[in-house]
Amino acid sequence: MESLGGTQWPPPKGVGNYDPTLGVDSYVNTSPVGSFRANCFGLYDMGGNVWQWCEDRYVKNSYPQDHDVRVVRGASWTHFHVYERLWSSFRFGSRPDVRYPDYGFRCVLIKGVRPCGLTIGTIIARFLECRDACEWNRVAAEQGYAIAQNYLGEMYDKGEGVARDLSKASEWYRKSADQGNSIAQSHLGIMCINDKGMVENLSSALDWLRKAADQGDADAQFYLGWMYDNGMGIAWDRTEAVAWYRKAAAQGNSNARDWLRENGY
Image (cartoon, rainbow, N blue to C red):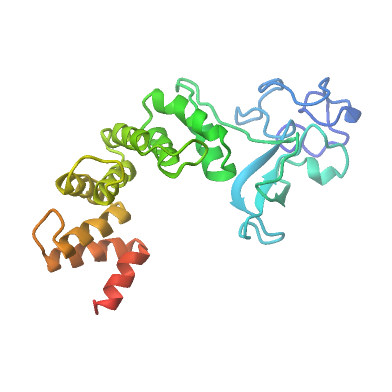
């Protein structure tokens, strides 16, 4: 509304997909993306069609912050009353497990950038946690996106949205880690330590954890400190252990903070 129709009421024809009783479009329910003209920023469908789930948490009059209630914005094809609700800036809150036919997402595609399932898979995996996230992430992972490969590895590792399979988890972690993804490198190192389906020895764990720790991964820094502290795969070195614990603690790693506090550092 604000982006195309301004404050005009009733809204002008072609402004977006809203309730049929308003007479601004010819769609009975949802409409294909890009069915209406773009706004002044070149963005399509910023209002109407479906209410947009946002990751931000919602508190009325104090946006954002509140338990599991998330922000929903942008109005939809079902709305025709309460003028303010059709504004693109209007927000309200809803729990992530709520399902309505006029709730959805507004995804961004950039001209010249190859589209993939990464964005959709990431949204679903981290926000709604649906089983569909596995297949969306697989699309992006098979296209070579390191972040998606790591997410897919995590899903196999935890058995989320797919049967737990540590062999497949390590396979996808490795693909991501080989591209330099620090989170995947950390996962591989921890799998080596815990012998979670891995054949490799502690020297491999040390190698992966060091690569991730050098990139600033707090979990890897903690486990690297733990290996020095316990002489696991490397000579015992309390000074080196404390240095890595401190780096992890500085990033908020609770295990590292607890160790430093309990040992008087």
